[in-house]
Amino acid sequence: MSTRVLVDAARPAREAGFDCVRRYLVADVQARFRRRGGDGVGFVFGIQAPAPEIDAAATQQGQPAERLIEGYRQRICARLQGLEVSCDWERTAVSSAADQAAELQNIFTSLFERDLVYRAGASWFFRSGRFAEWSEQGLERLSGWDLAAIEAQRQALDRVDGVELTATLLGAGELVLFTTSPDAVERTEFIALSPRHPNVEAIVGAEALAALGRASGDSPAVQTTLQASLPGVERLLPVVLTPALEERARATASLGVPADDPAAGLIAGHLQKSAGLPFRTHERGSKMRPASRYGLADLAVSRRGAWGTAIPVLHCRACGVVPLSEEARESDSPSPPCPSCGAPAERDPGVLSPDFEAMWGWLLASGGLDAAGSPDGSERLILVSAGDGSRLLHQRIAAAVAAGSGPDPEPEREGTFAVAAVVGRVEVKAPACVGSVDALDGLVAEIGADAVRFALLDAAGPSTVAGVFAHSVRHAERFLAELRDFAEPRLRASGPVESIDPATRLRRRLRAWCRVAEERTSAALERLDGKRATHELALFLRRIEDFEERAAAGGELAAEDRQAVAFALARWAELAEPCVPGIAAELSALAAAPAAMEELAA
Ligand SMILES: [Zn+2]
Image (cartoon, rainbow, N blue to C red; front, top):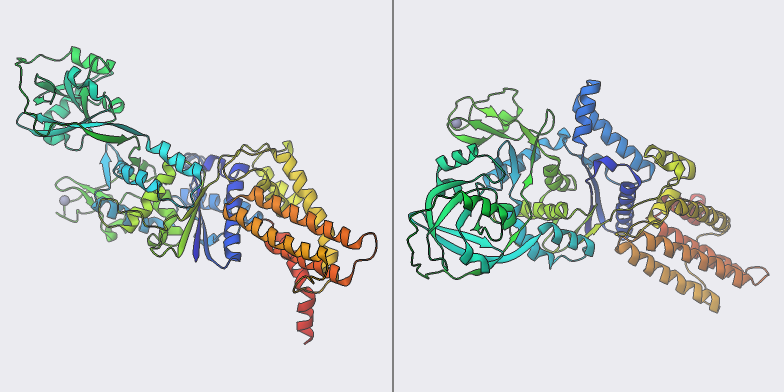
């Protein structure tokens, strides 16, 4: 089995705060745990560079943004290295860094050619809405996901149920309308068509759109010359071009019902009445059909900025938007020739947004787009994120889009994101001395990476709100000091031990405890529950101490009992490695040391 552990560091402002660092640790524990189980592990951080901060610093310090981003990457990596986080440092992806630019531009071009990105105003958007139904259906099939992660996605999808019905536009075909209140149909006074409707220009013409551009007020509206017949309404209804009803109706084509919506009332008051002849509708295909709409908004995938990865398209007067050729991407010319007609064309002023990079760049960094879910389930992707539902949806969509080739979503492959986790927001009450982000480094220097790791893992389960961090720090420090005092001399004095001699009941019981500790710690780590894992480790150590006390019963320990203690302590170190790698490695080395000496002698 191969495992990718992918950390989505989506919140740059709190990048290196305790909340974030704890999430990184949960990911690290997971990567170490999977490696110990024999998986090939790719462990990658996707870090969102804080664009406003970098803009401000670039202006203030007169430094190129690239250098500031690299500095940002190095600071975060240093902090993670201080905590013994075992990710693939070379592959850490930072948004807007130059190393992925060409691949990200290829992805954008492919999305453009598949009509999955579009330009509205000065910004580019990804058609997230097209994947809403697909995303919702897929939620049922996600295995191994944290329940909070599934619920967060459901909220981000924001589904509403209603009905669709078809209006006949006189001389202009048909228009599918959506409403959440089917009983309002007979009170309809006009048909509302949003300028964001996909066919709007073909239906109303450019002139009406231009007129709407000149309209003002809270509910800008333009009455078009079109009239529509609607099943269940005996008059012809005017068609009004307006964005004002779209949000409430959750549709770009809907019913104008003044009785239900003040904005519709305002518009209806200004409508010019037509001759108003009664109109008999033919009930052909007029049935209302149950339908749903989703609130998942199309994602902005560009931003304005002087630095970052350029949107790889040209604007040509004659041909419109044309993808940039790879050679033209590398040239400095502000107006390279259009690849279609050869006339000078303009570059797009935008750069790819951090959201775009998080969708595809993180997958690229973690080992390529195509392997996000292998059909045979031999690969698993563990996504560790802050649990923003929209962000999780987009990560799933990105994997599916990368796996497919057409504009429409393909069914989600079994095994894509076979396991995923969300580490909930943690309100860590840091001790006063470590209130600031920089103080975390101080704390690591003072009590060691292991104690900080143990404390942060102990502070909360994966999707719960944290307990008291000050208490956890003291507890972790004391616990690890006691462990060292107890384990070091005993392991030093003992040679490597193969097994526990089962001749006494106490030793048989200790042997059973070793098995139980293994099972429970692994189960906790499988669920990414660091709190439970640290609890089990503490309990296991108490059992070992308890065994020694009973076995000695006030006198000397038998040699087999000393060996049993050394065996159990070596098991403890193995189980604890994902959580406290430093002390675990020391103890494992002690447990193996005499054997290593003998090998040297031989
Ligand atoms: Zn052209």
